[in-house]
Image (cartoon, rainbow, N blue to C red; front, side):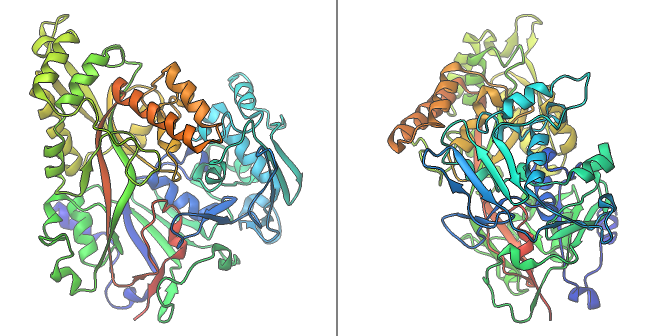
Length: 566
């Protein structure tokens, strides 16, 4: 009864509604549309539809490449590789929004807006997990961060960042501390999106619940924990998005609105997709997987006959069980972490997921350069796990301080059936060596807040590549990126840090490869993670969703999708 009640509250799609150019999908709850707080894929999707970045991905290009967005052309790089000059377009406008107090409620985006937005990223009071993308790269960026840590005074936004200069309205000069071949990728990331200072001043703490961007869509309505609706921004030229023609445009129209529906129950999501409520299905429950794929891994005829299409490709995503290295039990005992790694049965985990994943053997997924290919040293071996556990001080899993089985707590960011089944399987793995695993189920925003505050003991998470470079994964272990940064385990190893810093500066590809391999070897021995799996991206598309292509960096890509009008 509850299942059908959940479905019936969704919009109908029969009759006239089928002709509406509204894209709908299910997603996780989002707490803020502030780019500096966009720490999840669910937040990044709407943020990069309402705000813009200097550069964007060429949607159709493989291998991936960047093209201008707010920038009028690709940045000019100095001979020493340390100074970038960016010329901005002259036709990018914020709004409409009342905060601008102009006759049409709009204001032109200028270079000073980029400086302001990136200062917010460096504002310690905002505790952005995206601070890492420029920290140590832009001259003066970290100094601004340190100055902003004083909680007794407001952050001084008149303070300059030496490496960020708005020469005039259309010219931005960026000075780097060192040559950084991967720097341009960061200019297309959600955290670098450009916001107007008027909106931040006007809405204050409510800024994240509002938007006054320049992107292809604007926020139309938002019922927290239920639905967010975005609509095309009036007066904006969609030609700036450089939408490629992947399908014939005849008989299609750009989507005029995008709706994200918060729906925790996987069965309800699946039934909503089947009845046509949602145009895209990505998270399909294990119970329904046999109804999707045939014995050879293809789409079942029953679905294909309805015009449903399937697209699949290996994803640049790495999933793991993380240890909080601040924790006095798991963080200080590498033998315990090794025992838990040896207790993890990858084959059973793959079986639970019906082959939609591949076992993980390190932090970097296949498809990224300089990935280590040797077998990981602490894979499944129960006898070895028990021996390591005894050596760690917990013979047969008994905690000598209590005389009872060691009890660990795993924090999770979802409470759906699929997540619970996986967590229960994980608990059974650890029970085989005598360890109790308690489950702490939270909403995803609460989960992220707890990680930022370092409140967890163990947690399960994944990393989706921000850009196609090995250091984008290896930076998850760099000590300066500790929480609230992307190093959620708060791992610190001086040798690793030194290698990472050298890899960030060397111009020798051969040397960079050697550094990346050594860093992976260190992590696989220290084990701040238990390596769980790499994902195979599989999506199902309703017939009316056109001009779609799977993309490893999909945030904001709805702007390219089109709706077939029958």
